[in-house]
Length: 410
Image (tube, rainbow, N blue to C red):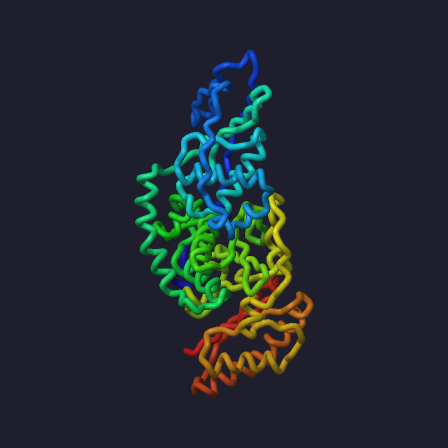
């Protein structure tokens, strides 16, 4: 198949590098020097006053942030302090907790909730203090990959692409239509590339048009938030026949029609679809919709959640792409199978898709469809278009309980 993008193995989802230092301040502690692999040099006076900054981030601005909403009142204060410090490019962020490891966890939550802070790469050094009888606190020294001036320039560069995407979504679009549009837009716009610059943030998508799972997921989150869809970033691992062992991965959780679903834009990209000897298909026709609004049962065949935060149950299949578009089968309805094939032929569609509710039904129906039923539809294609011969191809996706038949009209 010509014109396809180069396939690269792995996901390339980055992890956070956080240095924890706990200082027990007392009579013998004065000036402390901390170094970490040449990245951070720091001199601290443990007895100095604590310069906490006034919190100006509003509750309203955090209303849809999933990880923030899981926190208690004290942790929400720490979250706001970290978020505000990152947004203001502060060199040292002072926070109301003496637990360095817990501070690091909240730091990760801020980055999961806020794809817009692309200038922070997830690396930081956290120093915790228990200063005698005084209030315990910590400082976080964040690693910024861009200065404020550089970040503003990147925002300007991204604006045109973001606005172009959002212009394609009408005000009266449903939540499902918005999610599907963003899913397709990113897949059609972005090339999967492990070597892409900035591939852990949205710059790689909106500027470079090349990214990995973290970039795909954060861009999906950024665009859906802009059109009012409840969405968050999810981390975990994936495994399938392409990998020898589980790999780090990122995707999204969305709320659609009052129910939660998972969306994995990365795995919707055709770069993860292995097709051979099929008719020429466009980029749009090759999109994999198995990871658009899927539930736990579907996703957890290949994905495993991290244990950081409990995710809500995703049990509905109402907005599953195949259910919504009449390609999902729960019974061995041979009449419906034949009708679907003949309808696709009469409308000169390049493919017909069958998605089954169980592995047992898939195995049962597959043999029937690929036998006399496909032959009958091929004969119908020949007679309808006056052809002397016809060829068709099929693709079995066993782990997805899905069968695809491709028609050739030449």
